[in-house]
Each structure stands twice: as structure tokens, then as C-alpha cells.
Image (cartoon, rainbow, N blue to C red; front, side):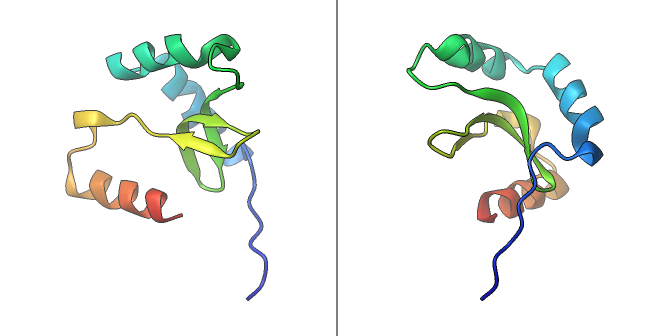
Length: 88
């Protein structure tokens, strides 16, 4: 099995990441208020790109990702995309 190349914050998703940062949903705002500024002892990044996906919150040091989608991802297409992202 070969090694998979993972690219972080690729330019293809830059505009999407910027839009997502400006359009926080309520649960993301609350969570970000607790994660930002190294409050938990780790630096988290918002709307961080990993390969073709955009992760809501990511801590590179411990490779920990948090998704806070809630009810906003309710269509069949969004659910399928979320399952693919989770499997990745």
C-alpha cells in the first residue's frame, strides 16, 4: 500500500474556507469561543483544509478534528458528503 499525499489548505478550497469562517452557525461560534486562543492547552484552527475537505476545527499538534454541523447538514447529499469526510 502506497503513501497518500495529504495537502493542507489547498488553494482550491481557499474561497470556501473564507466564506465558512464568515458564516459561523451558532454552535460553531460557541465552540470557537472555547477553543480559540489556546484556552484548552492546544492551538486550534478554524475552517482548516485537509485534502479536498474543510474541517470546522482542527488541532495540528495532536491531529484532532472537530465537526459541528448539527441540523444544517440534513439533505441526502450533505449527509453522504459528511460520511465520506468522516471515513477519510
